[in-house]
Amino acid sequence: MDRLPWTRFHWLVVVGLGVSWILDGLEIQIVTLISPIIGKPGTLALTTGQIGFLGSGYLIGQVVGALFFGRLTDKLGRKKLFIATLAIYLVGSGLGGLSWDYWSLLFFRFVAGLGIGGEYTAINSAIDELIPSKYRGRIDIAVNGTYWGGAAIGSAIGLYLFNTGNVPINWGWRLGFFIGPVLGLIIIFLRRTIPESPRWLMTHGRNDEAERTVDEIEQRVQHTGVHIEPVDDDKALEVTDPPRLGFFELTKVFFGEYPRRSIYGFTMMVTQAFLYNAIFFSYGLVLTVFYKVPTASLPYYFFPFAIGNLLGPLLLGSLFDSIGRRKMILFSYGVSGLLLLVSAWMFNSGMLSATTQTVFWSVIFFFASAGASSAYLTVSEIFPLELRGQAISYFFAISQGAGGVVAPWLFGHLIGGANNSHVRTGPLTVGYLIGAAIMIIGGLVAWFIGVNSERKSLEDIADPLSSTKRAQGGVAAAEATA
Image (tube, rainbow, N blue to C red; front, side, top):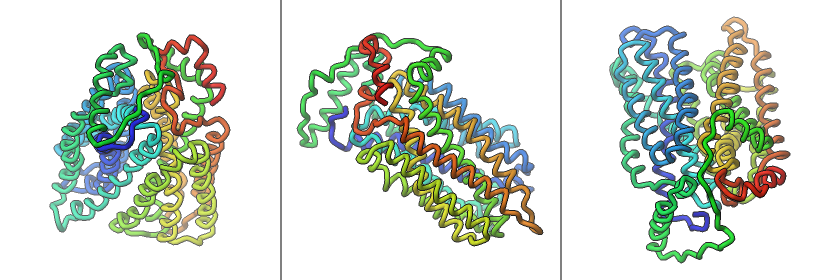
C-alpha cells in the first residue's frame, strides 16, 4: 500500500471519507447561527441556558461516540464503522429539524454528536491505513482542515436561510438541520465502494481477504498504465491473533510501553483543543462586547477566519511530509503562539479594531490550523495498528474534557466582566497569554519527544500488537529511538 503512486482510488478515499469534517464544520456553524433564532417566540423559545447546553450535549455525544465506536472500529473493522457512524449522524441531525421542544432537540443533538465522534476514529484510522506513506501527512492534515470549509459553507447558507425576510422564522432553522444529511446521503453511497483496510484484515486473521483487497487496488492502479514494483521480502510481517485488551490493559500499553508517545499525543490534542475552543466559542462575544459589532454582521467577520483555518492545512500540509513532523509542529505551534502574544499586547493597548483583530486571528489560525490538524494525524500513526481507533478516541476524549470544556468556560468568564459602560481588556488579555503559552509549550514538547514518522510505513513506526517481532524487543527499541 505504501509503495503505490497517487491514483483515482486515493481520491475516492479522500472524498468518500474526508467529507466527515466538512459535515462537522457545517453542523457547528449552522447550530451557532440558529442559536439566537430558537430562543425567539414562534420557534422553540429556549432560554439562553438551554441554548448553551445544546452545544454541551453535542460535545458529550462526540466524546461518548469516540470512545464507544473507537473500540468497535478496532474490533469490527474500519468499513463497517465509517458507514454506521455516518448513518447515525444523518439520523440525529435530520431529526433535529423535527424537534418539538428543548428535550427532543437536546437528544437529537446528542445522537448527531455520537455519529460525528465515531467518524473521527473510523475515518482517521482508514485514511492512514489506505493512503501511501509519502502522502499520509499532507492528506490527513488537509482532510482534517476541511472542517473550516464546512463552517464557511454553513455561514454562507445562514446568511440567506436564517434571514426572516427570505424564509419564515420557524422554517429556516429547521431546514438548516437537513443540509448536512442531504450531503451525507450522497457520500454514504460512495463509501460503499471503499474497501476494508487490508492492514486491519491481516491482523484479524483474514489474510486471504486482505490479499484480494490489495490485488484489486493494485489492478485499479495498473489499469492507469502505472508499473508497480514488487515488495521486498524484508517487508514481510508475521502476525498472530491480536490481543483482547480492556480499558486498564489499554492504558498500560499507552503509558507503560509508549510513555513518551502518550505524553506527546496527549499534549498535541489538549493544546489544540484549548486554543480552538477558547477562541472559537468566544469569537462572537469578543466582537460584540469589545468592538460593538452588530450580531447580524458576525458572519462577515467569520469568513476570513474560516478561510485562514482552511488554507493553513492545505498549503502547509505537504511540509509535514517533506520537512518533517517535529519541525513543522514546532513551527506551526510556535508561530501561532508568538503571534497570539503580539495580538494580546495590541488588544490590551487598544490598538486593534474588529477588522484588524479578525486579520490577526485569521493569520494566527492559518498556522495553528495546520498544527491542530496534525494532532489527529499524530495519535493515529504512532501507536500499534490494533489500537489506532482506540488511541484516537482515548486522546480525543481527554482533550475535549481537559481543553474543550475548560477553555470556553474560562474565556466566557474573562469576557463576562465586560459591559457597555466599562469594558476591561485585562482579564481577556490574560486568557490570550495563557493560550499563547500553551501553544508554544505544545510545539516544544513535539520537538523534544516527538516521533519522526514522515514517509514511514505505519508498521515501521509501531509494530502491530499481533506481530511476532514484539517478542524480540521491537517495542522498547521503537520507544527508545522515538
